[in-house]
Length: 161
Image 1 (tube, rainbow, N blue to C red):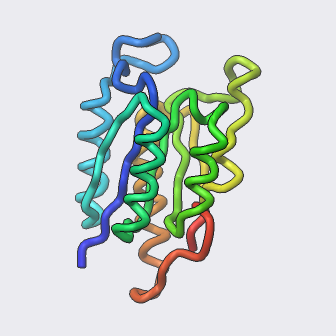
Image 2: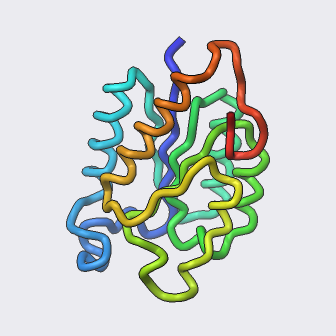
C-alpha cells in the first residue's frame, strides 16, 4: 500500500511569490507544490497538497490525515503558528508525525513570531530554508517512515513514532 503525506498550508501562503518577497522569496505556492510532488515521488509517497486561509479547515484536514492513516503531515500554519491553540490541539490529538515548516526564519523576525504553539507537539520543526524546507520535511518524514515496522502506527501526539 502506498503511503501518503499531507502538506497543509495556512493563511496567506496562497500569496507566496508576491507577498513580501524580501522575506518569503519569489517562489509561488505552485512552485512549493511542484517541489513537494517531486520529493514525494522520489520516496514513493502519495501527496495531498492543500492551502486554506481558514483555521477550521486546517484542523479538519489534520483530522482527515489521521482518519486516512497518512504517514505524515508537513504543516506550515502561517500566522496561526503563533496564535492557534486549536491547531496545536489537533496536532497533539492525532497519531501522525507532523513536521512544522516555515519559509522564513521565524526567530529572526518580530518578537511575536518567536513562539510556536505547534513546535512542542510536532515531531520536528524547520524554518529559514525558504521553500526548500518543504522538501527537507518530506525527506525527514520518508526517513522516519522507512525506520518503522510495516505494521506500526503512530505513537501519540503529532510527534508520531
